[in-house]
Image (cartoon, rainbow, N blue to C red):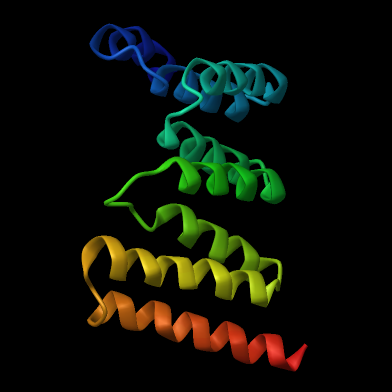
Length: 146
């Protein structure tokens, strides 16, 4: 495939965790989940302190519908990430929790997003902050109905 053909060029340009990540995606897409997982495992072993490795692993696991493992990977990424942090890991956790109707866990994840906006980006107002405040309120309301 086209993606497979581009891997050697990618490796020549930057031989980092993205090479096994994308190779694993190609294998998973072909149905060879076991080989994909082996590549992703080596990816993590090669760069165990790189938060992006765990974040990308979480994304790969979501595609396989392995949500609890994905949440664990996102949590590890969030733990390793240093300021200024991005919101992606916590937002992903929140989305998974919402899909699973785990409203309290979604609230906690979205509150982490708001904390990152405040602590790392000195942002306490504006469109994105308001959107996450709304998510927190909506999930709290759903949690109360359960």
